[in-house]
Length: 359
Image (cartoon, rainbow, N blue to C red; front, side):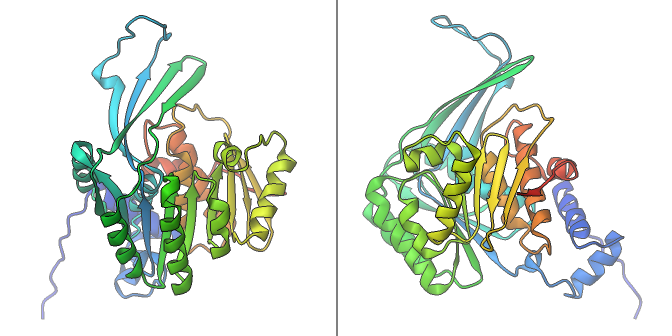
């Protein structure tokens, strides 16, 4: 039998992902990696060992405007079409975008509707995310992100709409979808939700806990504290959300660290708290890490926390937690210096500059 050449055409993104998998599995050449991968010798998450599902009850279309001049009050401040963009957003959506860039099998569950919900759904199709839409009678929100970019400074103004109440039909469909999840799934419940849907979130978490589905909470809601009994694998909280949840300021590092131990003792297995460019991470073994992202020009704050979660979950197969954190923080740095969620090539560029220390 004569040998035939297998001709496969890959996109630039696919090539970048394969190159990343080669490097992360420590193969000297791409050819050796592809051969072992094809023979199923590489037993890790990139072969479909697990799946990440993200649930976002309050997704959005972000209308992002970048102004590179002094912003004046009470007069028209004009900008060019190239200075603005529309982006699908919501914490769980951004997590899925990052996971997808790393080549991880991801499913997005979202509650959206109206003419904006149609645009939202079509755009998820366009960027290649697997997703299920639970229909809302209300139009999906449009959030305004105004970035004032000057030579030596950066200011960001964010105007977000409150979360809608999920209707009864969607609640029933969401719960049915959650019941289908299996043990090899990670469910990330992310973003904000209405107070009237606290019971829904609790039912979802209880069902996952019963089935040993791993939970991740990247939430902007006080109800997070009542969900810790379900022993989430990861809890990610920004300083803003921390203040909202506990109704107090956290000005000192010791206050942040103390609250991390409190969250750990309440059931959270791994905890990340973000204070601007500083990240604190407490493991389930009570090991505490700290990293400060330095020497970058920040032009974007949106999606940084979700970039951390997405990249952290994408690299669960690594032998070293420090390496896993490096990838997560590299994703943060790359997103901070991009107009939106960073590409994999930019994330890789920041990896070596990230330093993670035990404290």
